[in-house]
Length: 143
Image 1 (tube, helix red, strand yellow):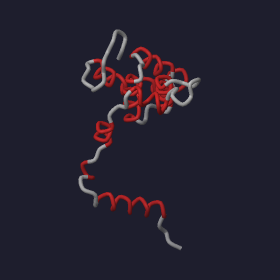
Image 2: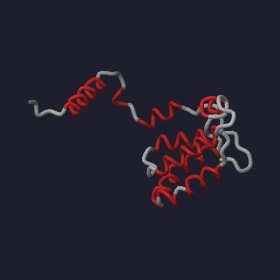
Image 3: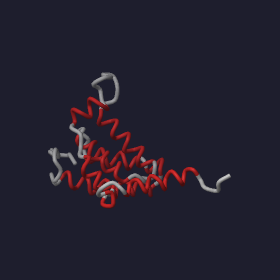
Image 4: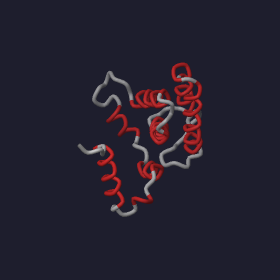
């Protein structure tokens, strides 16, 4: 019987294979996040909203629930949390709604998780309110 772990062998092989791809050494999760962009409100409503289920949740509500879930997990996935904030704003969520959603999770996930999520979300809200991101058209009360 071999003393090697099949999972470790598979991971080692995957890492070796990844090294052969051009520019993989320059890949970062942040770079991928910037490349991904933000879906339009209409597209989100089609995929996540009421287009196929008229009596269901709209895209904004689903994204606020996703933000709550990411906060409940301790805001560990920073890229997903930032993208969810961007998409929620695009879907019509106001800054106040985003902050309240995160704040509500302090009761269930604890204050550290809420603080961490707020630290991640605040720069995204700031950049979107500055209009530095495409599609960030602000109105009174918007992010």
